[in-house]
Length: 65
Ligand SMILES: [Zn+2]
Image 1 (cartoon, rainbow, N blue to C red):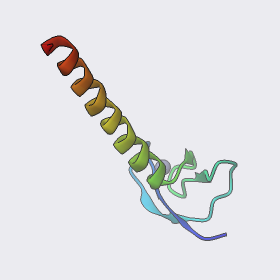
Image 2: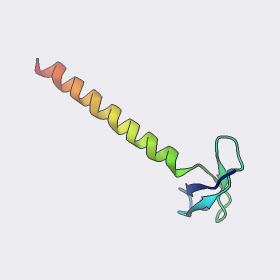
Image 3: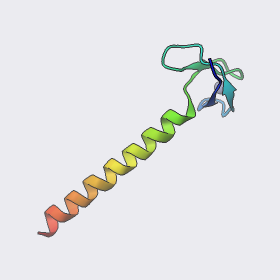
Image 4: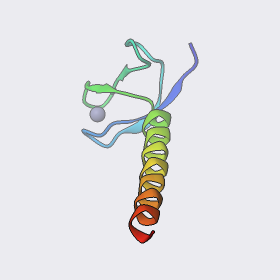
């Protein structure tokens, strides 16, 4: 299994680990809590931003005309 980039939201640790849990989760070597790959939150953050922009544009057009 390749190592994946992780960032722990509990203690702030950042680094690469081998996934050990289902769903590409791994144990944080600093505090021992479950962490998920950074790529997930990055892509979901972008997707939510794009959805928000689309909804905003539709609402703007709907209320203008
Ligand atoms: Zn941690």
